Length: 466
Image (cartoon, rainbow, N blue to C red; front, side):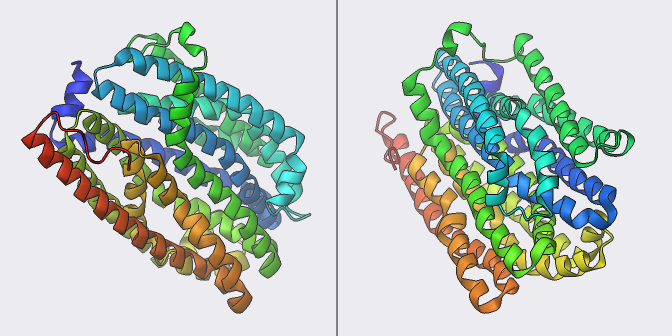
């Protein structure tokens, strides 16, 4: 057993989760921060046209999220399997999975870039771009699509690095790309006078440097895993298993993009460009609030996956309990900041008084159930880490597809624009209730499995196949 495997198997859970999560949390915060900075600089650069420019990013972002959803499916699905193979002491199988993830990342990226560039204008219109927002969205998205392969490789390799327990390297990669983006943004937007296109170029260049850092890490021999060219040949069995687990994060992100199609079109109808811009800013603020929770999840997954593979079920339960407590504290903190200081937060993005006033009232409705989100995030991640595709997929679809979309279609008919915003906290509350029921059941199964292991170590895990 190497040092990282010993750490995942034996180190005290509190210390281990802290060690694994803090680097991921810092990295995720940096990613969220540069997304905020993009929007802030663009809003400031366009002055009187800031509503349309911010609306352009708001419309382009969910299309970008589809590519990220595919990469997350590959990265999280593969990382879950790699963690369990390392827990089962099968490093060669883990390396073959790693190579297949690289193949999938490259293949899917080129497909997305080609299709995206061919259908870019129809896509933007489907996602709610009005005639005044379309030129800005087009300028931004065209550049982002060319960088799809870089975004994909960064996300997939970072998931793999975390799966082997080396969270600091993944953090460094995100800090490098995020930090460079913040530095390059004003240079390309203001100094080179490239506006919204400059923001996109800065993002792509920053990702390129981050990917080079990760490549250097794998070539240096410091990784537990080795990339063997012969393993790049696609293995249908591995790909099927990766996608079966990865379908859950894919569904969550894709359903989010699908939801935005409906949402942006409703916002355009009930509130016009300004409502789309308000939602774009709320989305960025929520992302900044949620990203630290995803850092905790990224720390949790290799611990849970490894110990589940090693049949140490009590460590799995202990890790999840601590993660729930931590993310709930984060959720409450995020809620308080967004609810108490919306005017100041919106003022960072634009000086438009109407945008600030409408944003203030909207965000205070949208975030009402935010304290419950931490538990939802951990619940869905638990099933991903255990390799249980069906319940993970269900929870990932739950909020967006089962609750939010129906609510956002029905409520505005009676409450106009207020109904759009009110759909968010109602969907969060319903999704929390479903997640709570499922997690309680899973905890009972894990407790039973732990008792059976004490009585008979060779007994088959009763939680398998759920």
